[in-house]
Image (tube, rainbow, N blue to C red; front, side):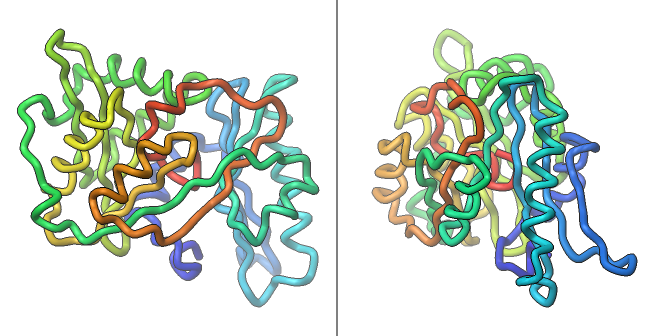
Length: 268
């Protein structure tokens, strides 16, 4: 269904998302046929995420989507601690609807896209493939870029098949950033891309792109890090799509300046 909507999901997204939170998905059926659904993923007790909200076109305009959306919100609130926050990335046409349900718009994220041109590829000896021994360092870095721990999601993401994953190693041996490139129905998507500096982000992007030279690559960049958006523009990437990040409950705290590419619009 996501593919039919033009969302270009990752080839392994279904299994990866399910492993992140097996209880984090609900659906609506008519006469035993699944006609819609969405994610209500609990990343930790203080933060959840609503994504993948879909109803089949032939069943829209009947109130089914509204009932499903509010049921999802309430089910997720029941899975979180009192005072927790819920995030979502909504398309522009739905922002007013989500606002009615208590979500407050915070910022815009833009999808930048490019063909993996040879001039974008780089070789940087500080960028190396992510190894099993890197998980704790990656987990710590990820915690600076996200509202609390998300171990289930992170483990599933790092272990999915066919991905290209790299870390940037500083001179002191610590990680200064990391990035993942996953295969999609059309081309590839970078995400997450977290880095301490624009130069580190540039190196990671270049190495990731070099892994799939000549194929389409996209990355979702939040406006809370204008340096990241300017980096994409300087690389000749085109802005092709936007979503609005919205929160229900308190606005989470994390280091937005480290985020050069979101993990996914679907689960945050």
